[in-house]
Length: 428
Image (cartoon, rainbow, N blue to C red; front, side, top):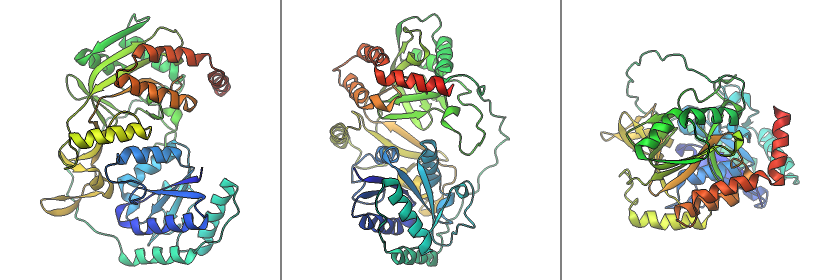
């Protein structure tokens, strides 16, 4: 398997990103692969764009951040940088255009950066990639990258008008969880609050389910991080998990009688199943199943045929038996994921900055996952392949939640999980 590199960039820098991809892959004779989301060979028409980016970020060995005076203020680059930081990836800023290492803004300047206008700096990057993969460091065409970076600087940044934002009242001080306490135990305490007296399995549907989730995922959801810009995983004890897909939870909001928002996901709840029968905190969880939503309406190709074709393709690739769509909200206006990525949109016929836009995701097919503490049997990469299929089978009516519960009980006794328990005790 080749060494995987994820290259983060904004739309205006795609030509330089393609050049970096070509130089690195050619230099290493394709023993190193570089993922560039805007490249036609990496994300094809009809692919679930965000899901592919999420997958590639998790699989990557190194994340390169292509930074210019433009991209450092773009929300998407900051989003991918934060995700890479949380995933503890080898993170390398690449300074291009008019941006130099000396004027690299925080928090990017906390990492050792590469200057794409300096041949020695580029060579050191190639040598570091080779060292990590235990390969012989190849020679590469540094002049091509220097020229591409210089050409980008000559173009200058694209200046777009900014719509004045209304002033907002001063926000109250954020409430945080205590700095102590194990994530599994914290989740178990919340479970007891939301499902008092439960000592087994109980199902809730619709509005009744949302009432319980409001208690389970109430504020606060996070500990106060030492660095507010880059909190550590331990600062986020509450997680959602679905096989290879998993992420911490930092925000919950009720949107309606049966609809909620978890971070950027808008979810219409079908049912939940609370499981509290093992009396071991790292086995407690809540199974969540949601109903499909209609396409938001801004993508012409998001129709029933497209949904079904992508559902089968997603299943074939092992991504999961579901399809979602990405968009964003800015001043109650729906904009595309691409516009959010670029930080600007066409409003009343003119391109303007959309600072403060919020990304959203909705599911166009049924979807399911579990809520649990960060430390949980199912939040374990060693069991991802087995449990991903089980979640899919439940959606396909080929398995039941009972089988998921039995899987949790079986995994508890495996040698792999017993080793995880030992490591956890040492950390505590």
